[in-house]
Length: 236
Length: 236
DNA sequence: CAAAACAAGATTGTGCACAAAAATTCGCTC
DNA sequence: GAGCGAATTTTTGTGCACAATCTTGTTTTG
Image 1 (cartoon, each protein chain N blue to C red):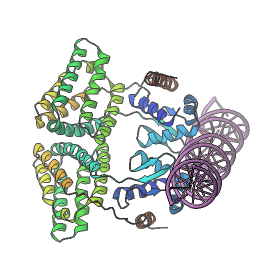
Image 2: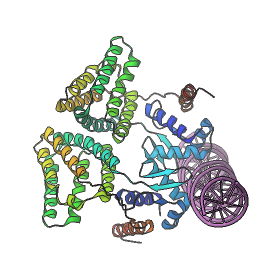
Image 3: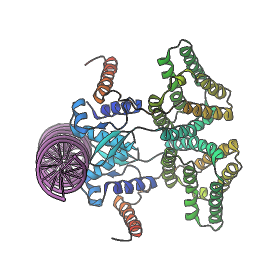
Image 4: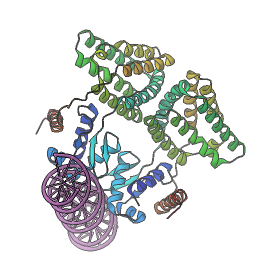
């Protein structure tokens, strides 16, 4: 397995937040799971440490981080700042085709919500923000937005309340409306209030249940990747 | 020399943009300059590569990057997006003390400009934006802003026109005024136009002169660091 | 019985040596 | 003399072995 593949798997696993905090990621153990030498996993772990996706303690190793609601607030605040700026920019720059694309997306969200298809809706709901970042057509902004959004996914996974899953679609439509009408101020406001509301839907969960094992989660992700690769390359 | 010190020196040198593009940073050569083993510099170079502060070509090594005006436009656009969001946020959240602090800074800029002290003014001018990022009191936003701002410093160094140095102070004051009056929309607009104007002051320079040598630049930076360390620690 | 000290095991950190790849130099041919 | 190709040399990539550090379990002592 190549180094960037290991990075992709670990990065994705850490971002989804399936693993509870404080789990140790031993170099040797990961090397066995991925079937590579220790140096490979070592390099990847340190890189992830620099990106703050896990914590590296000198002479102790790498551990998954457990963001609390305090840090969660920080992430949502950063998103409000960045995505408000995005909204201001997009209100001035969106093409008609992009507006149409956004309309389709919001409609798809509403449809999934109406049918009670929660997995699809949840997926589309996150993709709405990725889509906006893409439409800035600015790789730097895209990277920053993706980093922040993936961090919130981690939080939602950990502190989600089923009550929160049943609302929030109208807010995306409000953002869309403001953007399509090129009303910059209104778009900025709609984005900020939306993200504030999303944050309030997080509820503190005190008892941290054990969660699935490290190997279990990793195997699943690796297999999923293999499936995708096989489907794309159609060989091996 | 410790690893994080090497990282600090190299990161700073690359960000200042003193070096022309395409300069090779050999692992062994840097190891000699810093007086450490090759593995140390190797790790640092790869980390800097991941952060896109230099380009790493497989089996060829690390090279300094030379951002062209096309990429420069991308950086300034990203700054407009992020810092517009910052302005919107700050217009709502600034304390009276922070406003006072900003007023002092803008006054200091004006004073430096009046006295024709260009180095000081240039320094203060960049710090204005760092200051705004700090005032969000959000580490995530601060990191993103610092990364983008340092990238523009690189561009200014490379494409600066002496004509551009003599204006731009009023724009900071306009941003300050809007923020202090808590006029969000006006602050966003002032920030966006300011950054657009800064970008227009860059001029394409075709002939890339040789620039100082790698070792020369690094030695200078290392010595500067030693001086700072000695002053702080007051020993060795 | 508790607590500290010590020893054994495991894990990370680091330098070294070799392998692989690219750049360069030298030599040969036309 | 120019162009092409092989050998050399330089540089990066990788695995291995050992050192340093931390954890854990045991023993000893107050």
